[in-house]
Image (cartoon, rainbow over all chains, first blue to last red; front, side, top):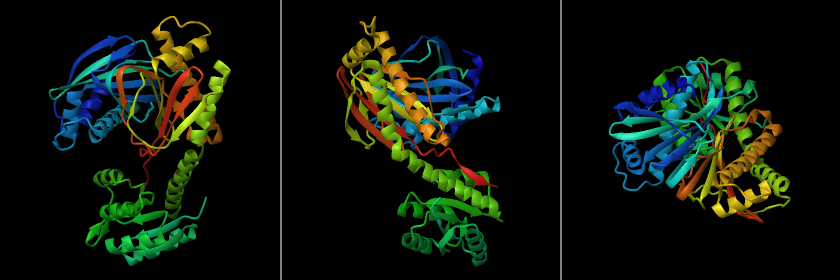
Length: 155
Length: 291
């Protein structure tokens, strides 16, 4: 895993989050995980194909997902993680990953992204790669895990 | 390509005359014109155009309000903004309300023609995909199962309803990328996965991880074969499949996605049931403009 994959993700958070009213963005930590990723409650997977291929798997606790969705919807209270809130979080990861793609393109790495799939509940995710880099991002007082499972596309 | 019926919305009779000549000379049917919000609603309702050219500055309203009104009548009508004004703010707003493209005045005939043709062929291409994608996936699925297990599964409960789904225990998710992006999900119980893995391996699976890997590989083959078949039908689709991610656990709810096309079905095999869910979006990323 090349560390160059990380900076486009950091920039994406800095670019996108303030537009949604989430001003404080910080990198809280980084770790190397194996193939297995425990769900913190909500996970969103976005596929990547191009010069590199793989997946970005976002993980958020249910509570933080509700808080972020509420902020994105101009402070509307989110009691249940319903369809509207799920749609807001999916859209957030779509924006973040699209921004990552733009950041990569500045370095002449061309990637395209798939539609996000949001999954919630009690489960484990097995990544296609056995080396997953996890970047923990703090957004205001919430945490978004960004699990990156990407490799150079040799095809 | 079929005839494209166009309505021109502009408050200037001079611009309408210019655009009408330009569009007619290039083979488009101009079926109506409007210069206010009320007349836009009336003309679009009566003529049901394929595409509307939209000015930005119209007395008493603007291009955005008129676009929203048109999409309330029929969200399939394509709107392109044809305006002398052009800045980031307008483009951002226009994309948000699903405008299909943008051309700046004074309009170049060749470029506007190309823009309209690209937007309309895009629409036809999506309809083409809608026409055959579910059959292609079924064929790929039956092929893969036949080759691996020498049995042919039965496909039941086919549906195009887009709803949240609960997993039976294992969900394999693959993103699809290309002309239209989307996703493919395979879902099954652990027991079904174990039995399918056993027959595919022709021995007892060594452990749970091996079972999951076999199912991911089967899903990957079905998705890959199906996307290749779609690409063979028309290479513009250029579909590719991202590596599978496997979700397994106590409770897995898969949110409905914002997709233009969805197909789901249950697959009854001799070794247990699985379900597939396939969706494609219209790909709003493809913003077209001539500036």
